[in-house]
Amino acid sequence: TRLLTSGWWGMARKINYTGDWIMGLSWCLVCGVQSAVPYFYAVYFMILLVHRAGRDDHLCSVKYGDDWLEYKRRVPYLFVPGLF
Image 1 (cartoon, one colour):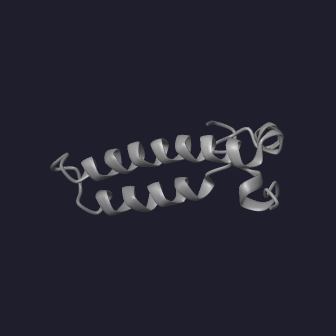
Image 2 (cartoon, one colour):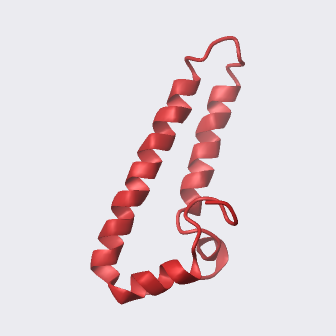
Image 3 (cartoon, rainbow, N blue to C red):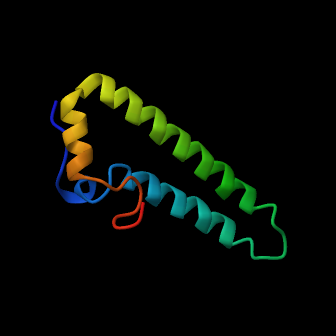
């Protein structure tokens, strides 16, 4: 199995999670700012994605071994290129 180090996955290891979260946040934003209740979804979803990314990182390190460490060296950002 090859690990992708180009294109979207060359910018961040879980860049698709960032897109998913932005889409979820946009659903909250259409509700306006009169209530914080809709934003609980975005917070919950962020917690879920961060937890899932950690779990995936562990499973990939088991599956790929040293190749996973090299992949993380080449693609240091998890969600947002240049930030995190």
